[in-house]
Amino acid sequence: MFDAEKIKNECIAWIRDFFEHNGKGCNAVVGISGGKDSSTVAALCAEALGKDHVIGVLMPCGEQHDIDCSKQLVKHLGIKNYTVNIKPAVDGLISSMPDGMEISRQTKINLPARIRMATLYAISQSNNGRVANTCNLSEDYVGYATRYGDGAGDFSPISQLTVQEVKAIGKVLGLPKNLVEKTPIDGLTDKTDEDNLGFSYATLDKYIRTGICEDENIKEKIDTLYRNNRFKLEPIPYFKPNF
Image 1 (cartoon, rainbow, N blue to C red):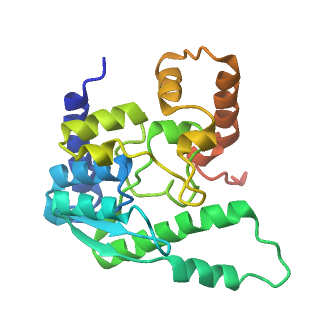
Image 2: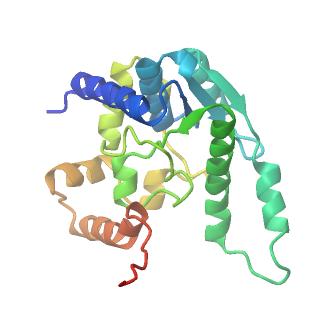
């Protein structure tokens, strides 16, 4: 039932409207991982604004074995791009932490994502830009994003689209098949997203759109992740004084 062509055109119109009211003449700045999400967002922005108004940022952390996919994407779209190796920044911050303080595994996992977002904003502010959020609905639903890391941005073209829907739009946009179908890995252990989650995106997407999940154990796991991570999508809690 998903009309990828229709939704693609509506999303392009939405991006144009966003920039008309929130940065006319500005550039879209997109972190490029070489996967379906960043590739689709970059392609949507290129169609909406013109390739001369899209800047891709490649951000390896040391050696990145699949960086050729990122290079393939920016070449395919013909967009301006920068490469910033974030490893010195990550290592520098880790080494500057207080002596004797144990640095948790989760800190080490999330820190590169947050430094990548800081990098995107540094490049954006120096290039009259607006930072694109590249998260999709499936990842957001179960909290598979780093708050103030890849979960941040100024505008979010695909956050209401599931993995399967993003893939469909990527195909309509004419993106290379290997980028659209690229298996996402966590970048730390080389486990896939689905390995870490414990279920497939196809199962998750079906549950999001239909409410149907045949496996009760997986359904409970999805529901628990949704409840525990919902705060990532909500505005920061604030105190309202009673004057």
